[in-house]
Length: 337
Ligand SMILES: [Zn+2]
Image (cartoon, rainbow, N blue to C red):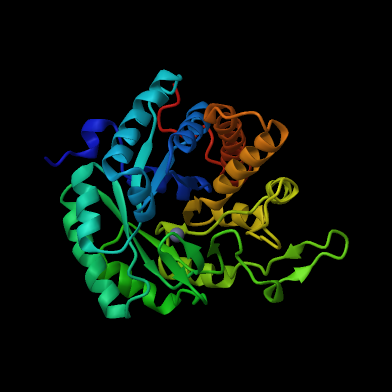
């Protein structure tokens, strides 16, 4: 039996994207695969009165079970209300849908937004597939994100060796032919915790840390000129906090030269037509840092709540910092009371 997201209290991205573009902020899009991540996301966004996009990837569905994830999202709406957020704006979004069938399945299960990622296909095939998904999703008022350009890095089943920036000359044709509601672009962000190779970076002589190359804001500007006011999405926008990398490495981990996108660049992007910023790796790093530290300091502990609890707390701190300091999405719900 198909279910509409509206009956379970979710919203699509349309209104929040409009407000984000006009207000110069961006909506956080956080991936979740387990209970602790979801609790931390909902607690952070509800307490700070921020709209939020819960992202589910194909990998998350195979890890946690698709049915369970969808009911967790339904539970998240009720949880947000229970902790004092009377009018939460929560989107359940498919991240990197790779086929019409997967997108249709998510629409039928109660997702309020889907991404169809045809960016690795030849241009005409990307247009055709994306249009097919839009035609189906829009019948149910589900919003659709498409993608042009290729991001480097690894994310679940999505991976590419090299990035190819979005071609500004294609964006008008793509958005008008497909009817997508938002467009993910490639301007130098990247999936995973190793966003750049050491040879792409310079090294800070004081700290010895890698300094990544800047994002291609000239490409973003050219895209915004072609599509004034159109919602733009950035994937792969974790900043890979070095404090978490250091904790992981101190307590037996091995993440040499992990590097992300500096937060000041994301802040600058959030003020533009970029209205959705995807952050996944930073949550994984916070979780792992807290688990490694707790288990190293308390080797006799074997109750998962004793190390997943601190992981959840650290993720909540991280999500709140992103909402307030990077995206500026706090106190941006349509109804704040
Ligand atoms: Zn992505």
